[in-house]
Image 1 (cartoon, helix red, strand yellow):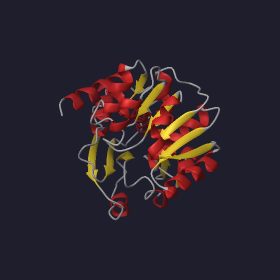
Image 2 (cartoon, one colour; image 1 turned 135 degrees about the horizontal axis):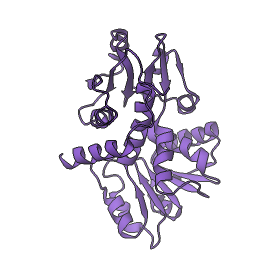
Image 3 (tube, one colour; image 1 turned 90 degrees about the vertical axis):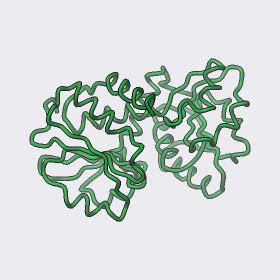
Image 4 (cartoon, helix red, strand yellow; image 1 turned 180 degrees about the vertical axis):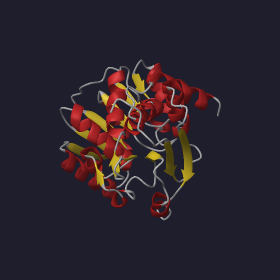
Length: 279
C-alpha cells in the first residue's frame, strides 16, 4: 500500500513488563516525520491472561499492535492468520488489522536482524555463532538460515536448551551444533557472533576477544554499550546493537500499519538514541 491506512489511526505496544519499551518513541517519531498528525501510539501492560480481553475490546480505529514478551506466542491462537516468517519461529511481534476486520500476525524481528546486518555490510557469512537460547536465539537462527552458508554453533547452559536449538535448526534448515556455555569464548572465532543473552551475561567473556574479531550483533540496547560490545569495538571489530535491531523491525511495523513506505529510518534511530541518552 502506498497511501495511509484509511479510518484506522491507533496503534500500541503490548507486553509485561512494558514501561521500558522504546517502541512509542520510535513509532511517534515516524508519525511526525510522515506528517501523520492524527495517529496515536500507546503502551499497555498486558500479560497472557489479559490479552484475549484486550483484543476483544478494540474498535475499528486500530491499525496494529507491536508485541513483546510474553505475548509473541500467546497471541497466535487469537489471530486469523500469520505470515510464513512468523510461523517459522512460532512468534508474532506485529499484528495488523485489515480493512475487512481480520487480525494478521507477522514477525519483523527476523527481517529486522537481516536489515541491521546489511547496514553494517554483512550479507553472507561462512559460519556463525549464537550465544544463548530462547525466542531471540530462534529468530537469530531464522535470520542466519538466509545468510549463513555453513554451520552455526549455539552456546547454551543446559542440554534441554541445546536440544531446543538443534530442533530449531532442523526446522529452519540450519546446520546447528551446540556447545556448553563454559566454551563460549570459542564463539569469537566465528566471523559473525550473535549474542542473545540477558544483560551482564557476556561481561566475563570480553577478555577473550581475539586480535582480529569479525562482527558482533549484541541484541541488547539497554544498558548500551555492553561490556562485550565496548571491548569488541576496541579490538576493531564491527558491532551491531540492539537499537539497530529495534529500529529496523519498527520501520517494517510502521510501513505495515500505516501503509506508508519507506518509513523514516534515520528519524526513528535519532529519536531512539535521544531517548536512551536521557535515561
